Length: 587
Image (cartoon, rainbow, N blue to C red; front, side, top):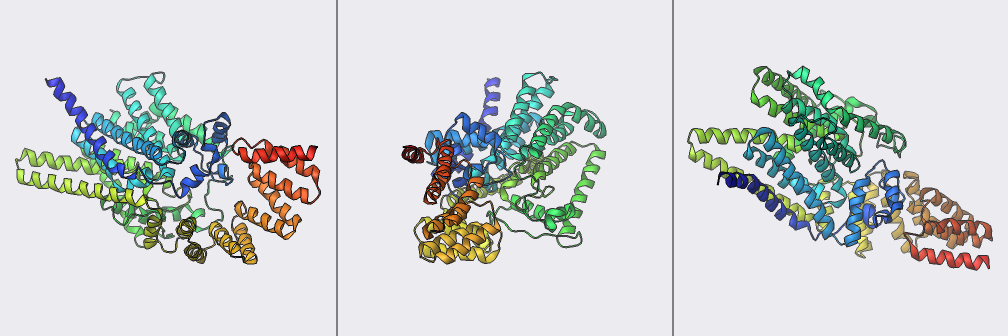
């Protein structure tokens, strides 16, 4: 009977976690793929099956190479999951959302297991896990299919940490299955999203906080000794990403040097006010939206940089105080704060990245935050129970239930909003009306609905804001071209190329226009550029052959056709046309 009760007490919280979070995320199951999902999945032929050629492509090219663009994203395992989803369901959304939801829920169960095993308190473990699972900020990483990398890397890091903990508590060496599997999961995490590089440091912090029996200074060295294979894996990964897998030949995501990208102290000062925004969003998740703008700060003396700097200094002083007092709270604070800041490290601005702030960057860091908060909630419950203050115990329980219900409500609302792309984008414009990307996305949505008038309005708003993105210029050019304003369209295409010479769509449009105008030399020039930008696109070679045939250059046309024939596996229709044309020219 006692064993049965113990078993029930173990599994009942897990069932509750699965049911509650499963209910919340059932509201995203019919949401269509949109935004970056188009580039990463729908229009990317290299994730439409798990062929050997596609697997090689995932491991040797950047994440956007499948649509002819360049980036420094490298996520082969993420693309493997996309390919499995596509094989099963094409672009129907259900299986994509089910996969992401399951990954998220499983991660929540891992959080529960880890906290329960380390601190031996089921209530503490349940609170941390439920807050992780139902927090509205998580929808940006779970409901947005292109954001699955955040959930995947977190799941693999949690798995690696669970296995590391099991191995250490059993005093197992690195040839034990738990340690070997933890290394494998680390590799899979790195292949899912680059932020997996923080795992060795997280493992050291975890070891120092809960596993080491040495004094703090000695435990640091011991922690590095116990985790050195993780550092070897990350070191090898880092060397590859700096050399053969550094697709943009830089760690800087900014194309042009600027104050933020060139100065570490500026990035640190800028991060401090963002940290305050993150903390507010964790406690009171309202006004949620993607594409958040930010202010760059170049001085410690500016508001609110210095208050947050003093707060971090205060946190450090508090940790020193707890350490000297040798209290149980020290382990909680050390693990919680180190987990939060280590997990947030890759997106803190230490390395210049593509944005200042995103809500989904809190996906894994929030575990550390809620560990500290939940610890004091449990202590308060224990105190009220020991003093038999049943009224206050009831009030605290009621407050917590209402607070968690608010999170549930907000998460459901976010899931529903993600299901309406137009309303989703417009909700962002309420907070960021000048966002180039969002105005462009609203324009795209209207264009796909056949409402070119509204599409043109938002494309024009996008190009009014800044000359950072080529897409709205190209999109507006497409509308002008459809209206017969070919000259205006060409000017916009040229502007798009000036902003981003590697953006291949305007070259296609210009090649078509020049060919129609009879300017075959200009048409050929643009097609030659396309051959460099999208060298595996069979349609480019077919169109090139047509242009060279019009220029009476049969030899070059045949050369293009034979080359294009090598890349027709993912486009069989154009393969038929190429073979027919080759046969006609060779007879």
